[in-house]
Length: 108
Image (tube, rainbow, N blue to C red):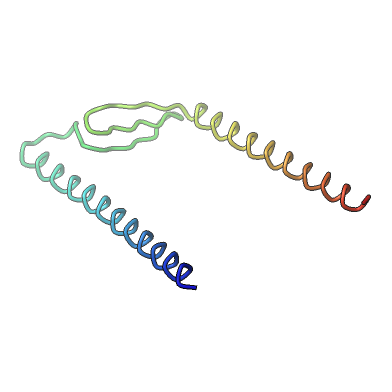
């Protein structure tokens, strides 16, 4: 019983730690954004940002820390289709195995 309580306490502590780290990460990104906006307005710079996102003509343009990344919507759609297909294939295999086990148990 003590091991169960200890595991439950450790799991709760781990979840709390992860939540704190996630909040700290978002606070860090928010601080970077505030400092970036202040610096750009002070120096009259309008084109470069730390992070920026734009969507035009089925192209996602993401600007992260000085690097520009352009991703076509077709590429995203293809990845989503491939992931869905993989998940469906795995689920079909699981269902087939379950039905085989059920048939085996019924025939015994």
